[in-house]
Length: 276
Ligand SMILES: NC(=O)c1ccc[n+]([C@@H]2O[C@H](COP(=O)([O-])OP(=O)(O)OC[C@H]3O[C@@H](n4cnc5c(N)ncnc54)[C@H](O)[C@@H]3O)[C@@H](O)[C@H]2O)c1
Image (tube, rainbow, N blue to C red; front, side, top):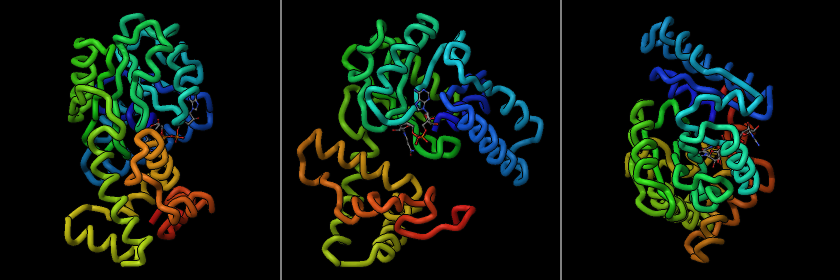
């Protein structure tokens, strides 16, 4: 997520510092972004010069201080673990310019659970992008109880500056807007599967042909990662106690078997080396 968010901003003229603790992850990020932009060049949708300029605008650094020097906005997209995010935010508070907005791309954690690790909770918020950020237009900006109006405006403006459409959640709620609606629909798909009403393939076909979704819930789960889907469900279930969010036993079995979707070559469907 972080790699593509940085690249998306750079495509719109923003100088972006991309940080990871792993130098290898940074190398993969650069190679992947290069491949994705090259595809646009090959299809005549981007000039070779613009692609090179956008790639050059992403500076990588394993040193966090170097990555955030001079930043106006920092978007954190590390692993979905609260303690890791809180540690990163405390570091960012120390290393990023005092006026910088600190945003998290977390899919499940409201900024209020992270912002108090910093001395600037008023300048913290969620900026929730969708996978893949180079394609998906939406950003959910979520304000926490201490987020200032100015921070909200800057996050919304920054999303627009990087060519994305922001929507504002005026208060924190688990799942934000899109995932709440998506989860209810896909939970129903899992209920139909668990009850033996139809195969996963037929449920996907029904949703794709009957509702015009580009991908049915099982194909989409494979695309995002079934571990991501599962932990998001579990989080919603645990935080709301609402039975409607309880993860499907068949989804749990896939995750336990390490069949996580495209990234492992197998989830609900099977994939070749190119993810087809
Ligand atoms: N994958 C999605 O579809 C999706 C969509 C929206 C939001 N998100 C959110 O984005 C975030 C990242 O998700 P992802 O799928 O890109 O995860 P990922 O595991 O692919 O990437 C996380 C990266 O964080 C790095 N990292 C771990 N600890 C770090 C630290 N202390 N400092 C710096 N880097 C560190 C890892 O090396 C890894 O490269 C999560 O909060 C997730 O909820 C994911």
